Amino acid sequence: MTTITPIYTGVAAHIAEYADAIAVSGGGATLIFVSGTPGLREDGTVPEDFTDEARQCWTNVERALGKAGAKLTDIVYMRQWVTSRDNASAYLAVSKEVIRHQPAAMFSIIDGLVWPNIRVEVEVTAILSA
Image (cartoon, rainbow, N blue to C red):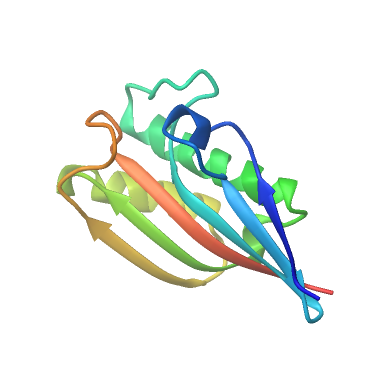
C-alpha cells in the first residue's frame, strides 16, 4: 500500500496553499518531493544579501527533508533556479558547501520567480530505503 503524507514547514504558506513537501511511502522505500523552495525566513521576508538568501533556501529544504526523516545526503535529484546570471557563482558556491555528494541536477537562470524579490528557488527529490 502506498501512503502519501504532506509535510508543512511554513515556507509555502507564505506564497499559496500547498505542501512544502510530500512523502510517498510504499514498496520498501519513501520518496520525498520537496516543492520549489525559496530562501524565505520564517516571517516570510527575503534576506537582502543574496548569499544569505541562498543559504536560507537550503536551510528550508533541509527542514522539509528532516520532517520526513531524510537528510540532504538522501537527495537524488535537485532543480535550482536563480533570477540573475550575476548571482550564479554565489549560488553555486553555497550549493557546493551544502551538497557534498553528486545527485542528478538541473541549474537554470530564469527571468523571475513568484515574487519579484525572490532570487533563488530549489526543488529536490530524496529517497529513503526501508
